Amino acid sequence: MAAAAGARTRGLLWAAVVAHVVASGAGFVKDLDESFKENRKDDIWLVDFYAPWCGHCKKLEPVWNEVGIEMRNMGSPVKVGKMDATSFSSIASEFGVRGYPTIKLLKGDLAYNYRGPRTKDDIVEFANRVAGPLIRPLPSQHMFEHVQKRHRVLFVYVGGESPLKEKYIEVASELIVYTYFFSASEDVVPEYVTLPELPAVMVFKDGTYFVYDEYEDGDLSSWINRERFQGYLNVDGFTLYELGDTGKLVAIAVIDDKNSSVEHTRLKSIIQEVARDYRDHFHRDFQFGHMDGNDYINSLLMDDLTIPTIVVLNTSNQQYFLPDRHIESTEDMVQFINNILDGTAEGLKIARSEE
Image 1 (spheres, rainbow, N blue to C red):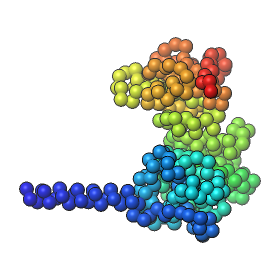
Image 2 (image 1 turned 90 degrees about the vertical axis):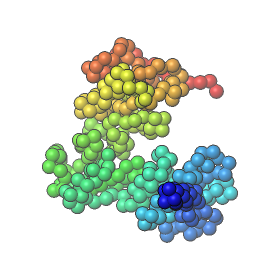
Image 3 (image 1 turned 45 degrees about the vertical axis):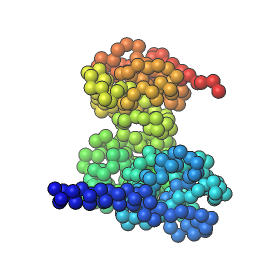
Image 4 (image 1 turned 135 degrees about the vertical axis):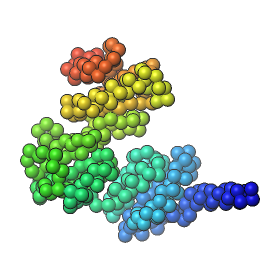
């Protein structure tokens, strides 16, 4: 009994210590002031620009302390700081801070905005990606296989010096905030890959790969921006906002994740099957996924969709499509998509609330 009580007490004390370390950041997050502008150039900084009165900033604070601890424990060269953007407004303004909280990675003269989910793992992953090399070389097949296992989506340039490589580097400098960029020689590319010509740019995702074709895909930057997502996603409001930049239509099964009834699971399965089995047909034009609950989609469309249902959003022209009949099978969904592509499906305009 005494031993059990002692163990329990030690466990509670250890939990309290851990909670204190996370709450305080244990000094791993530096409070920044006006001297930061002059002193930062020799280091890479991950900075939270906040306002003391901001509710979202207060919610981020414990996460930010965890980020500071994690970066220190990893031995990362990235230093983690926070700045009261209301007290040092001129510095915040120079860095382009327009809202709170704003997270930026500052590397030399470059400032990279973080726009992802405000979780420790996502923020740390962003910092490590952007702080590292712009283009990461893959010197062996073993290393190629290793990065494929680690990353759901990765872009690879294959070949020597060329105008395409220059463009690839230029695009990487802009889009490294979202995804990883690698380079490799032809002899380390997996044997199953067929390249029509060199140099080439490829994206590996969803268990397959796609080769960039300037004639079919247009501008390299636009193509990479479109292809940086997996073919099937768990869609939330943030993801939907990001998908708006791709120009793709977004086909969503709106379901209740907690509801295991046949209809909910069937619609989700249909969307997954179309994303997988018809990706060669539709991946250039469509993004697929499911959304848990209809609150967000109803507020976005100013409509009252009952779940489970399927909706296709065209974020480039504020239009959406609802099936004109029940989607019973993969074939029904493919027909619905083809009707949208050939213009025979009737689109509805997303309503706008009056200001």
